[in-house]
Length: 206
Image (cartoon, rainbow, N blue to C red; front, top):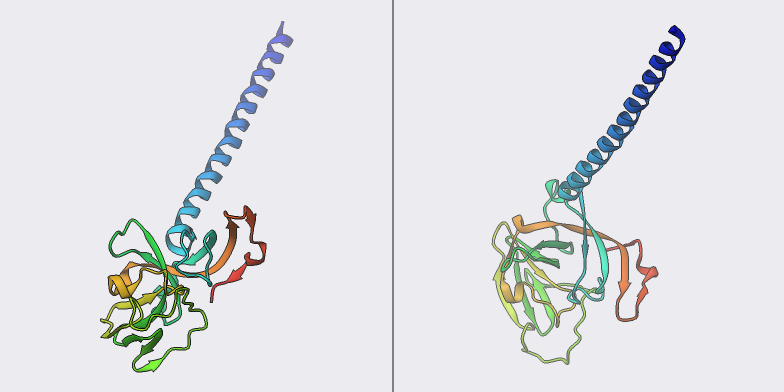
């Protein structure tokens, strides 16, 4: 009579241990997923964030359909510098993100005359800048300033100078609105031709 009882107890014990193990495995998976989510949120908030380029304002440096990574912590250690390509909250609608190049920083004088940008009276060498429209001296966006950039602000422009809403039109950018500095293209899709621009993958952003 005792033997069946012992077998029943043993079977119940095995079943209990199996349930405990299953719960333990599920708990481990849940904890791992939760930790991964928390780390992803922390990384996205403070370290690196991905953005997609929706417009042609930064052509030829960035193409429509480029997916880029943005360094979000670099400006904790240094100030933005001329030439940095930054992502920021659009001053007229902070729900939108813009990307432009820093042309002048606080305290510097900036001016533009006949497609030449001057900072503190010296012309900038800008191999990244293009003008797609016909040359119209004195036309919109070609003549600007001189103005002095306020402390704590930046003057930014798109590389595609004839197709960029930037500081020439909406004014100075406050440094506190910066999300980070772009540094890498990790994906690039040409929607018009329906193909991957594989030659752009992994390209550093100058």
